[in-house]
Length: 335
Image 1 (cartoon, rainbow, N blue to C red):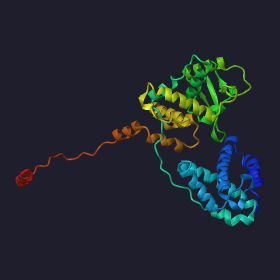
Image 2: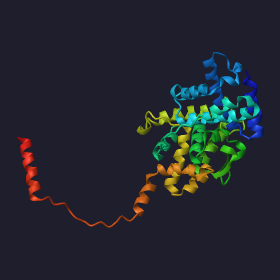
Image 3: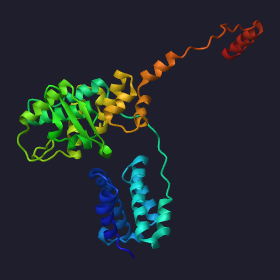
Image 4: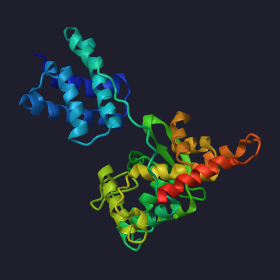
């Protein structure tokens, strides 16, 4: 039996960051996938994660783990496929290090990805965004932080990782306010800030205080804001906003929906998918095209731009015999 612990340590600590050049965020995503897998495998075989062997991670166990993600954890097909991709990447590493496991690795790599529905992205309307941004009490320190945090997330179309990772050194609040965003896949983008967004950020920085954290947003203890911390803040203010905006009642609004809302509103305003892709930092414009399915105005313009065919007009005129037969049948039905 081959111990799993040293193999996964080499994969996470050397192969991904040093040989493949993976970013810290990508490595954390892989680590979370393996955490779920090893916890499931340890329960299944009745041991601790540190005692697992690579031979125990066979194809039937991986399939059972994928089913567990969907049935027990409630994950969708997209999340399932992402976890499977991480496992296959690890198995490609294993097959070069341990040739004796080639057959086992081949069975796991043969597990297909699952097809999933391409649903419309969930987003907020302008009125709903306005209600959420107006929910915090900006006369308090945390209220000023929450307003600035949610406003920046929406206005910049930021991913939650980009928001909580934004550093003070990347922010410029002079005559031309702007922010340097260190995005997914180490792609950086520089975008200007709306005057209202810059005003909210200045209000927050005025009461932020001196904390050792380099990030713009910190929690009540002075440490960097986390993903779960921002999710909690957003949930709290969505509930408060629902008191004045009935369409928010009972809705679960994720941080990514603020990004989607920015994209949809920007597309409605500019009618240019390329500008939206540039603003969101998409490397491939095909990723941005998903918002075209949301914006009904784009489809309406396409319909109106097409000249309908000229059709000969006319009306159907029933013969007298047909009318008599229908009337006779109606009388028989009534009697």
